[in-house]
Every structure is written in structure tokens, then in C-alpha cells.
Image (cartoon, rainbow, N blue to C red; front, side, top):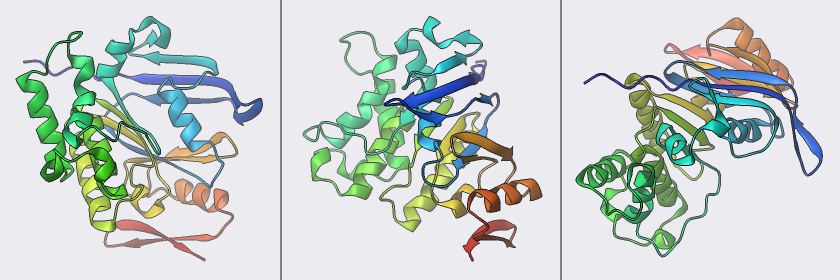
Length: 257
């Protein structure tokens, strides 16, 4: 069976305002190949707003295209098969079981009012085992801790089995071991041909990505590999020269100074 074509995503934005206040300046962003891209920058840089615009969740002045077709020409169900989304502080029905919440990620693959298929159930179990949430699959979402809830919502995004995953602060409420598990999951998805675009505050984890997008004041100031000198210069610039970047065991880490 031939592997599905990678669904390229491109954004050409002339501006975006929220409540009449400009948040994003003119910028362009393209996702054309698998890999993990981390969006970083100081508070208020526009990182989450950019990701929401890239997922078609906010109105803006500009163009958004998926596989070269304008966003508006796609049916919502078609887009939902190609792109999965994990946002900040997402609300779900607390009375649903964890497994039912994850099954919501399979809706784009199901006919209207059709019951879940064997493939749907297999995808849910696989995603929940990946996030180590399978053991509480029958518990109501409202009974879970913040970290447990986040792992269920991550499983929901993974259950879509899309080749584009957009995640806004996916490490919220996760302890360090589960943050490391998230990195392993992302690398595994990238190795299978997916692109993951994540907004991260955890700079030392972002430095493990394949590519960094550095933002400041509503604009992209740099795109590049985490190990590039130009990337390090951009990071020091946007964080007001209060970072030291060191290489330890072939990995870059950021220290406050």
C-alpha cells in the first residue's frame, strides 16, 4: 500500500488582531516535510496565536492553504483527518470516560452516527497506551489529575493518526518523566512521516526539536536548527541576553544568566 502524501501547510499572513489589538505582524510559514518544529519566544510574542491561525481557528488577513488548496475549499471533516490539534486548557465533558474522550479524535474517520469500528477502537487503545493512560480508560475525565487529563487529551490528538499535529503547550501539568515520554512520542511520529508543530515554554525541550521558530513581538525573527549559531543569537536576543547556551553530551541546553 502506498504511503499517503505529506499534507503541506502554508500560511501567508498580513496581520492578525484580537479585540482590535494587533497581535501578529506580516509573516510567512510553511510546513512541507516531516519533522518536529518548536515555536519559542518570550511571553506575549504571539506563539499561540500563530499556531491557532495555522490551524484555521482564528480569522486573519492573509491566506492559509492545505496541500496547495485554500483552507476554505476543504470540508471540515477532510481537514480534521489531516490535522490534529491539542490546545491550551481545553475543556471536555468531564462526565465522559477517558476512552470516550480519546474516541472523539476518531470522529473525522466515522460516517455520520455510525458506531466506532474495530480500527477506531484499535487507534484509541494504541494512543492511550502511548501516553500511559490506558489503565484509567473507564474513569470519568473529571476525576483525573491535571497531568492525567493532559495525557488523555494528547491521546485524543494522537488517535486521529494525522500527518500534521499542532500542539499548544502540550507539556502543561506533565512531570519530567512524562515530558520525556512526550519527546519520544513526537520523535516517533516524525520518524513515521508526520510533522509536529509545538509551542513550548520549556526551552531545553524545544532545543531537542529538528527546527526552531523564534518569535518576538508578533513576528518570526528566525527559523533554523537548534545547534546553529544564528539560532542561538536569536534566542539570546529575544530573551534579552539572559540566556547561556551550552552543549552537553551532544545536546544543547539553555541556562539563565
